[in-house]
Image (cartoon, rainbow, N blue to C red; front, top):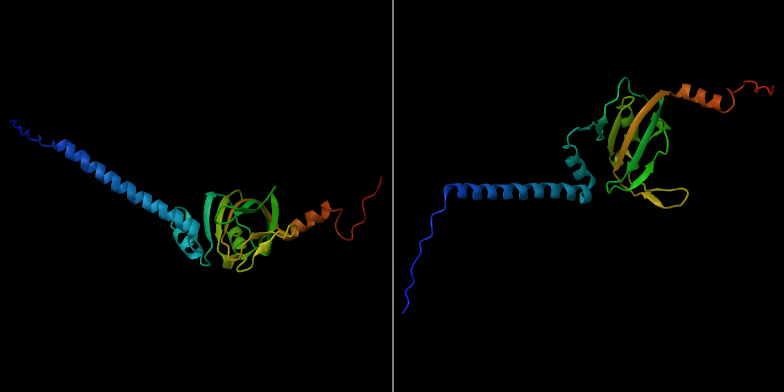
Length: 199
């Protein structure tokens, strides 16, 4: 017959208990962070435009205007801002919420401030020369329920009710009248001026 000798379990040291509780707290915090950032990703990818914009305006540095345009300064510019009577020289890139690029300037591009979609016009008038900005333009300030197609291919490039995201660098701006004079001079002189002599 054998006898079993009971061996008592030594008590757990207090320092070990502290480490166990610390590990539990870290695991809970990690789970909460994962849930938060996971939710942010789902909102960015799948939520409707209103939910996306509501979450986006809480992002550091994003401000929302009375119209609902959201703007973030990437690089601060200096001086005055363009007006409706100006032409702005910009570099830009436009993407959809899923990151798909639908348009981008290949070189500095002159844009008449007043002749753009409302959200882009409003954004330009908030920018300063030399600055770089990000714009989130809701459909009501963009193309609304109208889809846009590439005139060369007929392919849809901006679906209806799309929220548009632009990165815009404002290089320069000048009055539209001055810009038109410059263009006329480049095209061969002002209207009514004699043609250049052949000598």
